[in-house]
Image (cartoon, rainbow, N blue to C red; front, side):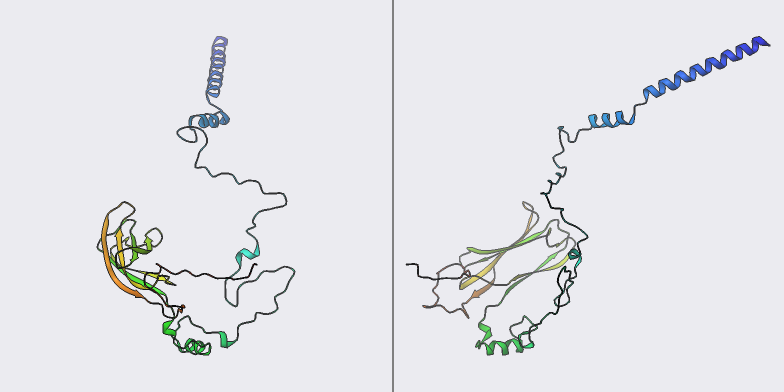
Length: 256
């Protein structure tokens, strides 16, 4: 009986020693978290060539002494827009009132052909507003039976011999167009036409992205004439004087 207990006790001790060795070996083979992170950092460089990642955002430079940077909680960052009821934020002052222009100066429109504008121009001595320069608008319709990737449209204003003087363009990245089949209308507003007097026409080009397929090209379309209505000049306007007119201010003073 004692021999049986002795054998059982020896087996128990042997098993405990065995499991202790196994635990020690397992713990010795398991790397620590710091070793794992170090190994990962060593085996995965920031870029294929090694070194710092060139696309990583650069850290902001330190601010000069006394500056705290922008504050998203600044009340001025959340003011509401408006003509006469815009949001306000002030410190050390008080807004008393907002004075509007008298009704005589409130036209309420930007159309020079409305009666109210005509009456005001008459009071200012401008008799015929039809001679005043007006904005130019170019309207282009595009019909595509298939979707087009990165479509772009451009047009020139050319003189009679085809020399371009103006250039306008619209790209799908800025003005989404032709991404699905259908008809698209593109409107280009030119607030003030600076071309010199003469006869002109348009040259259009419709294609894909730069270097892509060209779908259509038109030349000599939409002819128009520019005249010098409402712009007086001593000696008159002569053909071929220039290509376009630019605004400028003169100042003359005697210096000697």
